[in-house]
Amino acid sequence: QIYAAPVVNVDPNAPVPDMFKCGIDGELMDSPVLAADGHSYERSNIERYMRRKGDKSPKTGLKLDHTMLVTNNALMTMIDAWKKKHALPPQPSASSPPPSMTTTTAATTTATESLSSSSSA
Image (tube, rainbow, N blue to C red; front, side, top):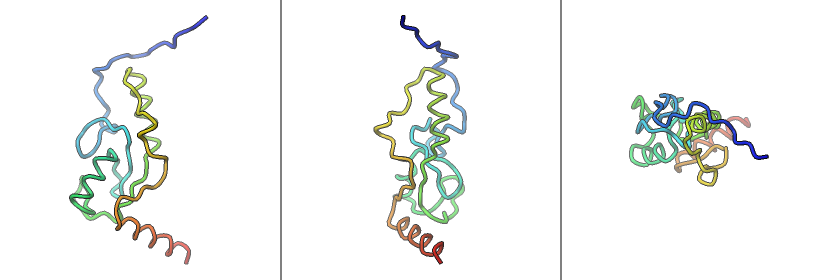
């Protein structure tokens, strides 16, 4: 016999929790990353923002300590669970980068090298 998994709380019109929304465009994130300001953003949005505005926080306007972005796996898992609960398609894994620290600019590479050399001292 084939059993279908019960679908709980199917409501495609359910409001998206604020913590699942990108701090730049307010849309539901698919590939959330954590920036140096402690906020999570949709990867493509923050990368585009940093190319245009440099090393300033989209939330505060203050200079970021570094421009390294880290995949927010915990938030991505929560978003995917929320999407599943509300019958929305999860993020396709092919478009998600591997869980790692991602460099986005030459400044990030320099910052990463600085951190590496200072931690080995």
